[in-house]
Length: 374
Image (cartoon, rainbow, N blue to C red; front, side, top):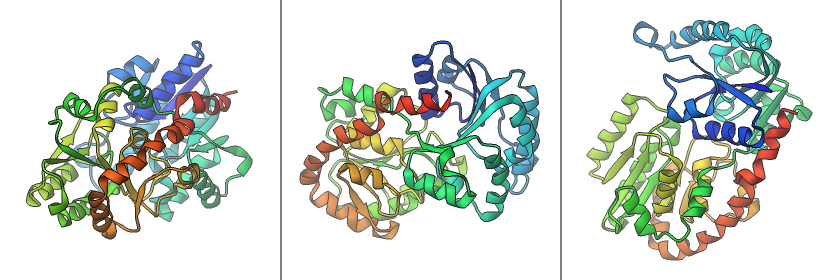
Protein backbone atom coordinates (compact mmCIF):
# COMPACT_ATOMS: atom_id res chain seq x y z
CA UNK A 1 0.00 0.00 0.00
CA UNK A 2 1.18 3.51 -0.85
CA UNK A 3 0.11 6.52 1.23
CA UNK A 4 0.90 10.17 0.52
CA UNK A 5 0.81 12.58 3.47
CA UNK A 6 0.30 16.32 3.02
CA UNK A 7 1.51 18.38 5.98
CA UNK A 8 4.51 19.57 7.96
CA UNK A 9 7.22 16.93 7.55
CA UNK A 10 8.85 18.02 10.82
CA UNK A 11 5.70 17.87 12.94
CA UNK A 12 6.35 15.20 15.62
CA UNK A 13 2.70 14.05 15.55
CA UNK A 14 2.82 13.33 11.81
CA UNK A 15 6.30 11.82 12.00
CA UNK A 16 5.34 9.48 14.82
CA UNK A 17 2.11 8.46 13.10
CA UNK A 18 4.04 7.45 9.98
CA UNK A 19 6.56 5.53 12.08
CA UNK A 20 3.84 3.68 14.02
CA UNK A 21 1.94 2.78 10.84
CA UNK A 22 5.12 1.34 9.39
CA UNK A 23 5.77 -0.53 12.61
CA UNK A 24 2.39 -2.26 12.32
CA UNK A 25 2.86 -3.01 8.61
CA UNK A 26 6.41 -3.14 7.29
CA UNK A 27 5.17 -3.24 3.68
CA UNK A 28 3.69 0.28 3.88
CA UNK A 29 5.29 3.02 1.79
CA UNK A 30 4.58 6.52 3.08
CA UNK A 31 5.66 9.66 1.19
CA UNK A 32 4.94 13.29 2.04
CA UNK A 33 4.41 16.65 0.38
CA UNK A 34 5.97 18.89 3.01
CA UNK A 35 4.43 22.32 3.43
CA UNK A 36 7.58 23.76 4.95
CA UNK A 37 11.00 24.95 3.80
CA UNK A 38 12.97 21.86 4.73
CA UNK A 39 12.71 18.35 6.07
CA UNK A 40 14.82 17.38 9.04
CA UNK A 41 16.78 14.22 9.68
CA UNK A 42 13.82 12.49 11.34
CA UNK A 43 11.64 13.14 8.29
CA UNK A 44 14.23 11.64 5.95
CA UNK A 45 14.42 8.56 8.19
CA UNK A 46 10.64 8.17 8.29
CA UNK A 47 9.31 8.95 4.82
CA UNK A 48 10.21 7.11 1.64
CA UNK A 49 9.99 10.23 -0.54
CA UNK A 50 9.67 13.91 0.30
CA UNK A 51 8.52 16.80 -1.90
CA UNK A 52 9.02 20.31 -0.47
CA UNK A 53 6.67 23.19 -1.27
CA UNK A 54 8.84 25.79 0.47
CA UNK A 55 7.49 29.25 1.30
CA UNK A 56 7.20 32.53 -0.62
CA UNK A 57 10.22 34.84 -0.69
CA UNK A 58 10.80 38.47 -1.63
CA UNK A 59 8.05 40.02 -3.73
CA UNK A 60 5.73 37.04 -3.14
CA UNK A 61 6.06 37.20 0.64
CA UNK A 62 3.45 39.94 0.87
CA UNK A 63 -0.06 39.93 2.19
CA UNK A 64 -2.43 39.04 -0.61
CA UNK A 65 0.29 37.44 -2.74
CA UNK A 66 1.21 34.50 -0.51
CA UNK A 67 -1.92 32.55 -1.42
CA UNK A 68 -1.39 33.15 -5.13
CA UNK A 69 2.19 31.90 -4.76
CA UNK A 70 0.98 28.75 -2.95
CA UNK A 71 -1.65 28.01 -5.62
CA UNK A 72 1.01 28.09 -8.33
CA UNK A 73 3.73 26.34 -6.32
CA UNK A 74 1.45 23.58 -5.08
CA UNK A 75 0.34 22.71 -8.61
CA UNK A 76 3.97 22.60 -9.71
CA UNK A 77 4.89 20.23 -6.89
CA UNK A 78 1.87 18.00 -7.52
CA UNK A 79 2.78 17.70 -11.19
CA UNK A 80 6.23 16.46 -10.16
CA UNK A 81 4.78 13.65 -8.04
CA UNK A 82 5.51 10.60 -10.14
CA UNK A 83 3.68 7.97 -8.09
CA UNK A 84 0.12 6.70 -7.80
CA UNK A 85 -1.23 6.30 -4.26
CA UNK A 86 -3.92 4.29 -2.57
CA UNK A 87 -4.53 7.15 -0.13
CA UNK A 88 -3.80 10.86 0.08
CA UNK A 89 -3.95 11.96 3.73
CA UNK A 90 -4.16 15.73 4.26
CA UNK A 91 -3.04 17.01 7.67
CA UNK A 92 -3.14 20.60 6.52
CA UNK A 93 -5.88 22.47 4.68
CA UNK A 94 -4.75 25.59 2.88
CA UNK A 95 -6.76 27.76 0.54
CA UNK A 96 -3.84 27.48 -1.87
CA UNK A 97 -4.60 23.76 -2.33
CA UNK A 98 -8.17 24.38 -3.47
CA UNK A 99 -7.09 25.10 -7.04
CA UNK A 100 -5.55 21.63 -7.41
CA UNK A 101 -8.44 19.29 -6.63
CA UNK A 102 -8.12 17.75 -10.09
CA UNK A 103 -4.50 16.74 -9.44
CA UNK A 104 -5.23 15.56 -5.91
CA UNK A 105 -7.94 13.26 -7.25
CA UNK A 106 -5.67 11.99 -9.99
CA UNK A 107 -2.75 10.92 -7.80
CA UNK A 108 -4.75 9.02 -5.15
CA UNK A 109 -7.59 6.52 -5.16
CA UNK A 110 -9.03 7.88 -1.89
CA UNK A 111 -8.52 11.05 0.11
CA UNK A 112 -8.62 11.63 3.88
CA UNK A 113 -8.57 14.88 5.84
CA UNK A 114 -7.48 15.13 9.48
CA UNK A 115 -8.72 18.35 11.05
CA UNK A 116 -6.50 20.12 13.59
CA UNK A 117 -8.94 22.90 14.37
CA UNK A 118 -7.42 26.19 13.26
CA UNK A 119 -8.62 25.77 9.67
CA UNK A 120 -12.14 25.35 11.06
CA UNK A 121 -12.25 27.90 13.85
CA UNK A 122 -9.91 30.64 12.64
CA UNK A 123 -10.80 30.84 8.95
CA UNK A 124 -13.17 33.58 7.72
CA UNK A 125 -16.12 32.55 5.59
CA UNK A 126 -14.37 33.58 2.38
CA UNK A 127 -11.64 31.01 3.11
CA UNK A 128 -14.15 28.37 4.18
CA UNK A 129 -15.85 28.72 0.79
CA UNK A 130 -12.53 27.94 -0.92
CA UNK A 131 -11.83 25.00 1.40
CA UNK A 132 -15.19 23.44 0.54
CA UNK A 133 -13.74 22.20 -2.75
CA UNK A 134 -11.12 20.21 -0.81
CA UNK A 135 -13.69 18.81 1.59
CA UNK A 136 -15.88 17.82 -1.37
CA UNK A 137 -13.24 15.41 -2.68
CA UNK A 138 -12.57 13.84 0.74
CA UNK A 139 -13.73 10.26 1.27
CA UNK A 140 -13.29 10.53 5.03
CA UNK A 141 -12.57 13.16 7.71
CA UNK A 142 -11.03 12.62 11.15
CA UNK A 143 -10.45 14.70 14.26
CA UNK A 144 -9.13 14.02 17.73
CA UNK A 145 -12.07 15.65 19.48
CA UNK A 146 -15.81 14.87 19.13
CA UNK A 147 -16.68 18.56 19.47
CA UNK A 148 -14.33 19.52 16.65
CA UNK A 149 -15.71 16.78 14.41
CA UNK A 150 -19.29 17.89 15.12
CA UNK A 151 -18.42 21.51 14.33
CA UNK A 152 -16.69 20.44 11.11
CA UNK A 153 -19.71 18.45 9.93
CA UNK A 154 -21.99 21.39 10.64
CA UNK A 155 -19.86 24.05 8.95
CA UNK A 156 -19.05 22.00 5.85
CA UNK A 157 -22.33 20.03 5.74
CA UNK A 158 -20.37 16.79 5.75
CA UNK A 159 -22.01 13.38 6.41
CA UNK A 160 -21.47 11.87 9.85
CA UNK A 161 -20.94 8.34 8.52
CA UNK A 162 -17.81 9.54 6.70
CA UNK A 163 -16.15 10.87 9.88
CA UNK A 164 -14.36 9.26 12.80
CA UNK A 165 -12.28 10.00 15.88
CA UNK A 166 -8.55 9.37 15.40
CA UNK A 167 -6.23 10.59 18.14
CA UNK A 168 -2.51 10.90 17.70
CA UNK A 169 -0.59 8.66 20.03
CA UNK A 170 1.99 10.59 22.00
CA UNK A 171 5.46 9.12 21.57
CA UNK A 172 6.96 11.09 24.50
CA UNK A 173 4.71 9.14 26.89
CA UNK A 174 6.99 6.15 26.35
CA UNK A 175 10.04 8.25 27.13
CA UNK A 176 8.36 9.66 30.24
CA UNK A 177 7.58 6.11 31.37
CA UNK A 178 11.22 5.15 30.91
CA UNK A 179 12.21 8.04 33.20
CA UNK A 180 9.71 7.36 35.98
CA UNK A 181 12.43 7.04 38.63
CA UNK A 182 14.22 10.27 37.63
CA UNK A 183 13.72 13.25 39.98
CA UNK A 184 12.31 16.58 38.79
CA UNK A 185 15.61 18.22 39.71
CA UNK A 186 17.46 15.78 37.46
CA UNK A 187 15.04 16.46 34.61
CA UNK A 188 15.78 20.18 34.91
CA UNK A 189 19.51 19.59 34.94
CA UNK A 190 19.15 17.41 31.82
CA UNK A 191 17.77 20.38 29.83
CA UNK A 192 20.33 22.86 31.19
CA UNK A 193 18.22 24.47 33.91
CA UNK A 194 19.36 24.83 37.52
CA UNK A 195 17.63 22.09 39.57
CA UNK A 196 16.16 24.55 42.10
CA UNK A 197 14.44 26.64 39.39
CA UNK A 198 10.63 26.86 39.36
CA UNK A 199 9.75 26.27 35.70
CA UNK A 200 6.63 27.61 33.95
CA UNK A 201 6.16 26.46 30.34
CA UNK A 202 4.13 28.94 28.29
CA UNK A 203 2.27 27.35 25.37
CA UNK A 204 3.91 24.95 22.96
CA UNK A 205 4.60 26.79 19.70
CA UNK A 206 5.24 30.25 18.29
CA UNK A 207 1.77 30.87 16.86
CA UNK A 208 0.11 34.09 17.98
CA UNK A 209 -2.93 31.90 18.64
CA UNK A 210 -1.17 30.72 21.80
CA UNK A 211 -1.86 34.21 23.26
CA UNK A 212 1.66 34.69 24.60
CA UNK A 213 1.08 38.38 25.31
CA UNK A 214 -1.82 37.55 27.62
CA UNK A 215 0.44 35.05 29.41
CA UNK A 216 3.19 37.66 29.85
CA UNK A 217 0.72 40.25 31.13
CA UNK A 218 -0.72 37.77 33.64
CA UNK A 219 2.70 36.64 34.86
CA UNK A 220 3.87 40.23 35.20
CA UNK A 221 0.79 41.03 37.30
CA UNK A 222 1.63 38.28 39.83
CA UNK A 223 5.39 38.55 39.57
CA UNK A 224 5.79 38.94 43.34
CA UNK A 225 4.26 35.48 43.84
CA UNK A 226 6.78 33.70 41.60
CA UNK A 227 9.22 31.47 43.51
CA UNK A 228 12.86 32.48 43.47
CA UNK A 229 14.48 31.44 41.21
CA UNK A 230 11.94 30.98 38.40
CA UNK A 231 12.15 30.63 34.62
CA UNK A 232 9.53 31.07 31.89
CA UNK A 233 10.03 28.60 29.06
CA UNK A 234 8.64 29.42 25.60
CA UNK A 235 8.78 26.61 22.99
CA UNK A 236 8.91 28.46 19.64
CA UNK A 237 10.30 25.84 17.24
CA UNK A 238 7.06 25.59 15.25
CA UNK A 239 4.65 28.19 13.90
CA UNK A 240 4.82 31.97 14.11
CA UNK A 241 7.26 34.26 12.35
CA UNK A 242 10.72 35.60 13.17
CA UNK A 243 9.15 39.04 13.61
CA UNK A 244 6.58 37.75 16.11
CA UNK A 245 9.21 35.89 18.12
CA UNK A 246 11.42 38.98 18.21
CA UNK A 247 8.50 41.13 19.42
CA UNK A 248 7.71 38.53 22.06
CA UNK A 249 11.27 38.61 23.30
CA UNK A 250 11.23 42.41 23.48
CA UNK A 251 8.07 42.30 25.61
CA UNK A 252 9.66 39.80 28.00
CA UNK A 253 12.73 41.99 28.33
CA UNK A 254 10.59 45.09 28.95
CA UNK A 255 8.72 43.24 31.68
CA UNK A 256 12.04 42.21 33.23
CA UNK A 257 11.04 38.55 33.35
CA UNK A 258 13.39 35.56 33.37
CA UNK A 259 12.78 33.55 30.22
CA UNK A 260 14.23 31.07 27.76
CA UNK A 261 13.14 30.19 24.22
CA UNK A 262 13.29 26.64 22.87
CA UNK A 263 13.95 27.33 19.20
CA UNK A 264 14.67 23.83 17.88
CA UNK A 265 12.65 20.64 17.61
CA UNK A 266 13.60 18.38 20.50
CA UNK A 267 14.09 14.61 20.21
CA UNK A 268 11.63 12.55 22.26
CA UNK A 269 13.96 11.99 25.21
CA UNK A 270 14.71 15.71 25.59
CA UNK A 271 11.04 16.52 25.14
CA UNK A 272 10.24 14.06 27.94
CA UNK A 273 12.79 15.77 30.20
CA UNK A 274 11.17 19.14 29.43
CA UNK A 275 7.66 17.87 30.26
CA UNK A 276 8.83 16.29 33.49
CA UNK A 277 10.92 19.32 34.48
CA UNK A 278 7.96 21.71 34.21
CA UNK A 279 6.14 22.81 37.36
CA UNK A 280 3.26 24.73 35.73
CA UNK A 281 2.14 24.61 32.09
CA UNK A 282 -0.08 27.39 30.69
CA UNK A 283 -2.19 26.56 27.62
CA UNK A 284 -4.73 29.23 26.61
CA UNK A 285 -4.93 29.00 22.82
CA UNK A 286 -7.71 30.83 21.03
CA UNK A 287 -8.92 27.50 19.63
CA UNK A 288 -7.75 23.90 19.86
CA UNK A 289 -9.07 20.38 19.70
CA UNK A 290 -6.79 18.25 21.91
CA UNK A 291 -3.26 19.60 22.27
CA UNK A 292 -0.72 16.77 22.42
CA UNK A 293 1.84 18.89 24.28
CA UNK A 294 -0.68 19.70 26.99
CA UNK A 295 -1.55 16.03 27.36
CA UNK A 296 2.13 15.20 27.78
CA UNK A 297 2.43 17.80 30.54
CA UNK A 298 -0.63 16.29 32.24
CA UNK A 299 0.88 12.80 31.91
CA UNK A 300 4.10 14.07 33.51
CA UNK A 301 2.12 15.30 36.52
CA UNK A 302 2.38 19.04 35.86
CA UNK A 303 -0.10 21.56 37.19
CA UNK A 304 -1.84 22.76 34.00
CA UNK A 305 -3.81 25.99 33.58
CA UNK A 306 -5.98 26.04 30.45
CA UNK A 307 -8.79 28.02 28.88
CA UNK A 308 -12.35 27.22 29.93
CA UNK A 309 -13.47 28.01 26.36
CA UNK A 310 -11.49 25.14 24.81
CA UNK A 311 -13.41 21.95 23.82
CA UNK A 312 -11.84 19.51 26.24
CA UNK A 313 -14.97 17.67 27.38
CA UNK A 314 -13.39 14.30 26.58
CA UNK A 315 -10.62 15.01 29.11
CA UNK A 316 -12.99 16.35 31.75
CA UNK A 317 -15.27 13.35 31.37
CA UNK A 318 -12.22 11.16 31.91
CA UNK A 319 -11.56 12.84 35.27
CA UNK A 320 -8.56 15.02 34.39
CA UNK A 321 -7.47 17.43 37.13
CA UNK A 322 -6.46 20.90 35.94
CA UNK A 323 -7.22 24.55 36.56
CA UNK A 324 -9.20 26.66 34.14
CA UNK A 325 -9.31 30.37 33.49
CA UNK A 326 -12.46 31.92 32.05
CA UNK A 327 -10.63 34.39 29.81
CA UNK A 328 -7.09 35.51 28.95
CA UNK A 329 -7.74 38.63 31.05
CA UNK A 330 -8.49 36.45 34.10
CA UNK A 331 -5.35 34.33 33.71
CA UNK A 332 -3.51 36.44 36.31
CA UNK A 333 -5.97 35.62 39.09
CA UNK A 334 -6.00 31.93 38.10
CA UNK A 335 -2.21 31.83 38.14
CA UNK A 336 -2.12 33.60 41.52
CA UNK A 337 -4.41 30.94 43.01
CA UNK A 338 -2.28 28.13 41.62
CA UNK A 339 0.97 29.69 42.88
CA UNK A 340 -0.47 30.21 46.38
CA UNK A 341 -1.68 26.59 46.56
CA UNK A 342 0.93 24.97 44.38
CA UNK A 343 1.99 22.09 46.64
CA UNK A 344 -1.62 21.02 47.21
CA UNK A 345 -2.53 21.25 43.53
CA UNK A 346 0.65 19.50 42.47
CA UNK A 347 -0.34 16.47 44.53
CA UNK A 348 -3.78 16.34 42.92
CA UNK A 349 -2.26 16.30 39.43
CA UNK A 350 -0.68 12.88 39.88
CA UNK A 351 -3.90 11.02 38.92
CA UNK A 352 -3.75 12.40 35.36
CA UNK A 353 -1.11 9.92 34.21
CA UNK A 354 -3.43 6.91 33.95
CA UNK A 355 -6.20 8.92 32.27
CA UNK A 356 -3.96 10.32 29.53
CA UNK A 357 -2.38 6.92 29.00
CA UNK A 358 -5.79 5.36 28.32
CA UNK A 359 -6.63 8.08 25.78
CA UNK A 360 -3.43 8.85 23.93
CA UNK A 361 -0.86 6.08 24.09
CA UNK A 362 -0.05 4.59 20.69
CA UNK A 363 -1.18 1.20 22.00
CA UNK A 364 -4.68 2.67 22.35
CA UNK A 365 -4.82 4.86 19.23
CA UNK A 366 -3.02 3.15 16.35
CA UNK A 367 -5.91 0.82 15.44
CA UNK A 368 -8.20 3.75 14.57
CA UNK A 369 -5.60 5.07 12.09
CA UNK A 370 -4.99 1.66 10.55
CA UNK A 371 -8.74 1.24 9.99
CA UNK A 372 -8.73 4.32 7.74
CA UNK A 373 -6.67 2.48 5.16
CA UNK A 374 -8.56 -0.81 5.08
